[in-house]
Amino acid sequence: MERKNIKNKILIALILIFGFNLAFAQDDIVFSNFGRNLSQAEKDFKSEVFVFPGDVIEFKIEIYTKNSLKEVILGNNFSSHLKLIEDSLTIDGKKTKVDLTNISFGDLATGTKKEIVFRAMVTPAETFTSLPYTIFSTATLKGKNFAQKTATVTINVKKPEMATGVPTGVNSPILLALESSLFLSLMLEIKEFTRRKIEEILSENKYWLYYRKTFSEFKLKRMRSKR
Image (tube, rainbow, N blue to C red):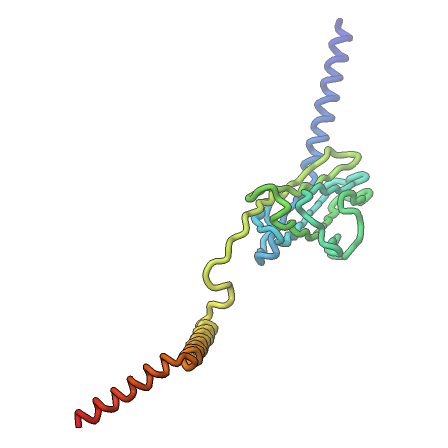
């Protein structure tokens, strides 16, 4: 009975030690995944991004090891509403062509830092069942001597805004004045064209010619009588 209790205590101790080591290893990995909307000229990377269909998002994944890691593999699982932009993938600032869903780093020594950057475009509005819509881009880090870690960017796709008023970039005073001048010139041309057409039509009408002649004679007689 005593031996059984000793075995149980040893087993519990081993479980506690293993659990402590696993938690320690997890805390010794700094793993992040952020994004920013390049189409909206965003500068800061965030865990939640707001976009319109067709916008371009830049993602940045960072890994920092405080302990040595074995057989490290980075995976990426992103929505079908995100299309990877060709030749946009860089690792530590260098362009590379690898499978973004399965990047193998092998063993990483203590103090190693990795930065993975890539860009993706949000698919057009017609590819969504409805808008607004939320999609995700999840990065996964796994290896032999540490528990799997994940980091997710939430992407809120907004409904495109309908164009109202003067389009962006055409509301400066100079451009507005130019538009007003062109509009006035166009209206004067339309007025002159309409006047000529009416005269052409009336000139072909003999009754109009008779009326015009009679009116002119009446006007002339009236002017003479006033003298």
